[in-house]
Length: 194
Picture 1 (cartoon, rainbow, N blue to C red):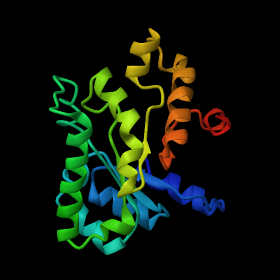
Picture 2: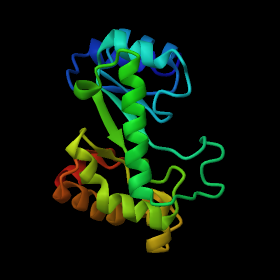
Picture 3: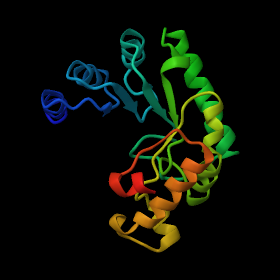
């Protein structure tokens, strides 16, 4: 709250009207950010970490991103395993939609899905999800966040995240051409040009 809220207040105070999102697993932080001018919530736990998050989503009626992650941020890369990563992630989104609907969240108009590129996934899992990500868009808007990720470093033999801009550009172009609704990137101007 100490780090994020002044940013939202400052941006809104200076007249910024672009949509802003808070990236948090905490309902308390999300609520404070919404009060300070945030428009949406990005929860990498898919509203599972904080039991108060679903109620906040229902009460506020704002768009929210649920991301698929195997395990927790501390354990997600220990030994990622899926029967079928594309189908398993789709089933996860269905389960979360059902659970959130049961708590009063307007899932059809609010939920955005993120297959969680790099979050509890191997290189092969990430590539399969990039190929299939637009398919989740039949039910919900899809956002992918491939920017500078480690799997690009593996492909490109590029250990430095800042050296993965062209790999990011390739994945952003693929996502846009395949019908993904949104991408999350670091190099905004360059990726907008892409």
